[in-house]
Length: 310
Image (cartoon, rainbow, N blue to C red; front, side, top):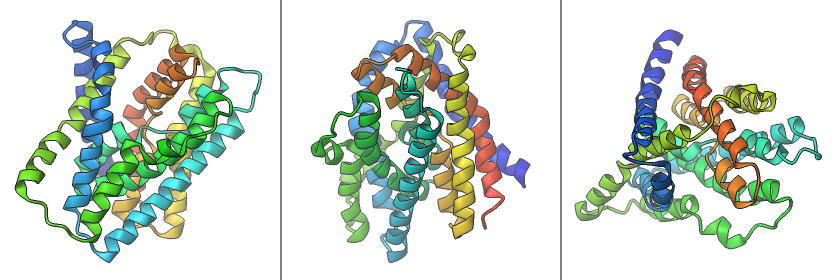
């Protein structure tokens, strides 16, 4: 069973990383450069990814059970982010190291939007995206509070950033469709489908261009990068897996949450480092190495986890 599950998940991850390889190649050939990807990132961040989340709310049956499941998924998302914050604080305590904030960000925050959502969609369809949407919503709350405080050295978060961000807005738009079972006419649903379908290829191709511009040779010599990568890809999903088994979470939700738990470090590690004057090169190397290793660890973790749930 483990090998069969590993093969299924590995196939889905391989499909995503073929798109990453395409992004790497087109950047090196000068067809589509990293600078263009960064300029286009707002389209992905503000329009396409929210469309994926809203569509999931439209497609999932608005039963009492599903509403309860969304709340449970959000609760598990809050536990995931709290766990990441605690691990980051415990294992990166050196206040004299100016780069500690970068390691903390990479340990605490996973790529639950650009990596987890496409994989959940590929494996479980709208239901998987629906569960992961609860995690994304909580991720944004932690991201714009705890995340900013880590990298800024104590800057206070702004309430409007907490509310007016793509993840939270998408959930707020999608909830009425779920709760009140509002029918969506084809003239609205079809454009939403077209826009949402862009998420997986664009996110992966963009990421490939980022990897093409990272000094991959020097990232293997930093031991702290390995520590952060281990905490993010191994320790965090295993702890979440043990907890979900203990409290009896259902298989499909557990698998979706495990996908989010085992996702590599978030790209916002690089973006926040650039915004607050931290070591962007270090952040890029960390995210790149973590993402490379996740090619192996994500399928193993998800296949391993599927053995424990009915």
